[in-house]
Amino acid sequence: MQQKIENLKSKSFEIRKRMMEMCIKAGTGHCTSSLSATDILTTLYYGGVMRHDPNNPDWEDRDRLFLSKGQASPLQYTILADLGYFDAAHLENFAQHGGAFGVHLQNSVPGVEITCGSLGHGFGIAAGSALAAKKDRKLNMVFALLGDGECYEGSIWETAMFASHNRLNNMVVIIDRNFQCVTDFTENIVALEPMVDRWEAFGWNVKRIDGHDHAALLDAFDGSRSRQSNRPLAIIADTVKGEGVDFMECVPLWHGIAPQSTDAENAMKTLEGRYVK
Amino acid sequence: MSNITQRDSFWNRVYELAKVDRDIIIVTEDMGAPSLDKFRTDLNDQFVNVGIAEQNGLLVASGLAMEGKCCFVYAIAPFVTLRALELIRVENAIMNIPLTIVGVGGGFGYDDSGPTHHLIEDIAIMRSMPNITINSISDAIMASAVADESVAMTSTNYIRLDRQLSPDIYKPGDDFSKGFAVVKPNADKYIIATGRMVQTALNASEKLAADGISLGVIDLFRIPVCIPELMNAIGGSKQLFSLEEHFLPGGMGSYLLEILNDEKTCIPLTRLGLSFEKGYCYTYGGRSKIHEYYEVDVDSVVTDIKKAMN
Image (cartoon, rainbow over all chains, first blue to last red; front, side, top):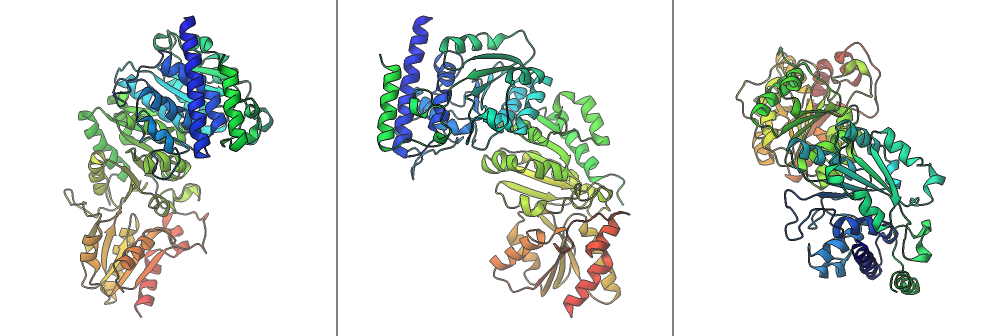
């Protein structure tokens, strides 16, 4: 177990580094949103949680992952390239003319389920996908990663009550709770807390964990495929927006941009300093 | 007058199709119909009620469709379209996830309910996006035929149903493949109408005939229409009129103007419909009173046509 966690830590560093390099080169991309969700996605993809096959992205029985916070596309693209879903050379042309993909999520990329950039979409589509799996008696799981700011969208709560009413216990939603939105901290804008109470009130089983702790993440996902509860599962993952690059952490101004020149150099140094012993 | 509404005719046919294709699913946004009661009873596993939640209805239907289901998402027309518009744009126009979006109450079907329930902008809005076909239904027979077509489609089909009983214009077995139909032939003058207004156009044509004026009637029920076939029908015309229960900017008449322009014709087209000057209305006492307010009742249409012909 300890080795698995060490491997996940190491992989998370690699992914963060590669993702930042890609965005820095392109001069664009939602770096801080990607950094906050990195450990969640590496646990799903590399931690043995999700069933998926890079050689067969459309495998009918794959677990679905709906990246509802589509602005974290640099993170998912970096992971999918690393896993071999497509040639990693495409990362070099991120958001460039002639490139295969840009700043927001695009469903033409192998391994990506949906085009997504405006918020409050992926979660509801995930519920439809989970309902289809139930109707067809399929055993695949449906995961959805939401931003916490995305929870301002009314459609999220329409879906939340629908999913619990329909007992979609094949569905796991992870809320990347980094407490930041575009311009400010969520609790200054319109308070999102108490998150646990809200999701519970909408009929979900809820776990709240440190979203950068791979052991806690593995534990939260453990058994999600064979839960006894009829309720869907919400994992509120407390994270830091910009995790790993100290001067970008918890600074709303870094939303949606990639560091350039000396900031870029410092970003890579601070990443190395944080993760390489 | 048909003894069945468009929606009951439509859902009756979907019921028959769904009995043999268990991947057909109706996602209703808490909207019923007498014809849906048996669907809910007999095919309960193919019936999903999301409540009055048009965004989630569109999303859940899209998720089901991504997994291979053939989904009909159903509500009162202004809500199933406009309330969920940005989701339709991303899921159905951009991603091209195929759905059948079924709206009841196009135009003034909900005549006594006021402007929140009138839908007089949807043709302009829905035709502005690729991968979406509009079917503006004019009678119960067409409604049934479009159900069959919808199941076979690989992109999104928006079906604009009237809420009220409508006179039969077609016969079972009629061909709807071209997207329009010449319901009253004429040598060189046509009024081209859609939905409920096809009957108004027929009535206006009869009145004009009594005054010795000959005017043909075309029902343009699908956008995009088959343009070469339409031009075959109207290309030799000397004068055209359009009539719709819809605001004039961007509507079916505007669509016709675009076609006539792109086809480099010089046929004059007079558009009849709802003007912005009249705005939205709180007129009660039935649909005919609303038509009088907007001056799209039969007498007003006859007057406007005579004026344009002189």
